[in-house]
Length: 87
Image 1 (cartoon, rainbow, N blue to C red):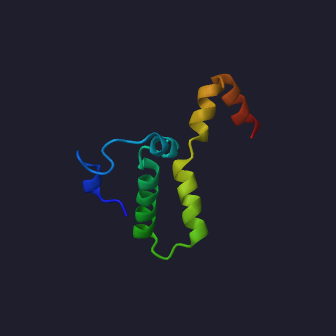
Image 2 (cartoon, one colour):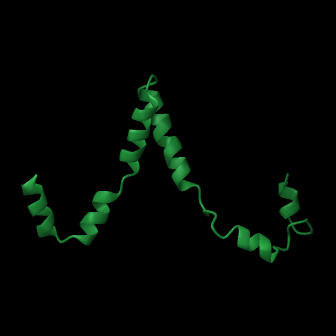
Image 3 (tube, one colour):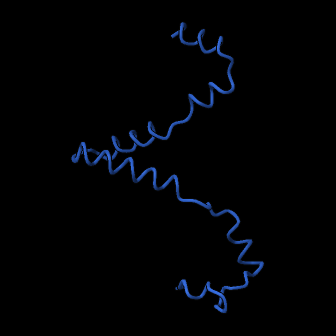
């Protein structure tokens, strides 16, 4: 188990070794997405305490879905209008 004290100056992990640096290159730097999911879950459980797992997952997916922003950035506005008329 690694303790915080070992990362302070003079501790075991003060100097980062090459193999440790290579092992942690794929680690996400922030936990913003996880905190967002916990926030959505807290809000959902506050309003609907008896919610099922599938409903909660759908709520998360709807809350973090950025597809429309991505498409609107890539597609010209006249194409978006045509798609809305076609549906």
